[in-house]
Image 1 (spheres, rainbow, N blue to C red):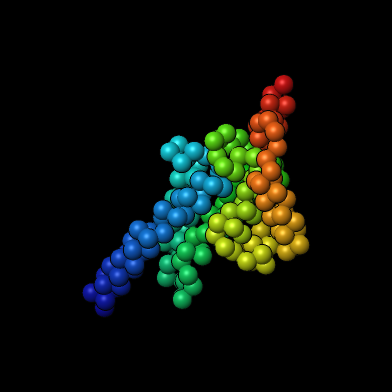
Image 2: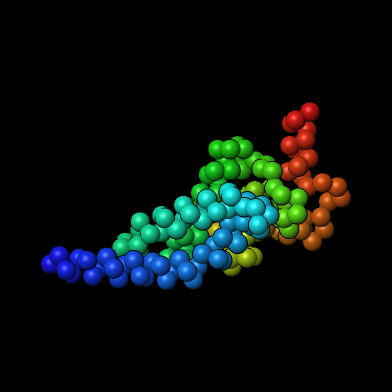
Length: 167
């Protein structure tokens, strides 16, 4: 019996290692887009990734056919949303890196844009994940897309909010 448990643990570890090797790059890029950090300087994104992968590993035996990537992405998104909520209040304004392509968006807009456009999550799934009505997710996605296509003149909105608060 003990030999069987050891072989199951080894199999689980190999499966999880293969998942991490295949998915960590994309998940890190997703986390970097969410945090709007620079690709080479992204400690918040790396922390989000580490937490998401650790959570996925802890739940590995309970996945039962569920896609581990979906589980990790859900954890990443909810952890980002909760962390932003607690740090800045109600998905408030963080301080994105000015070179980030998504720096002009609020954290909530970034979250929805990344889920919908980069990750390809359906509107209804994103709404359920975030606890918002699908119509609200649609409206935020449309507004964020318009902002990305026609960025406002001057510094990003999040930076403006930080400068006003500092004054």
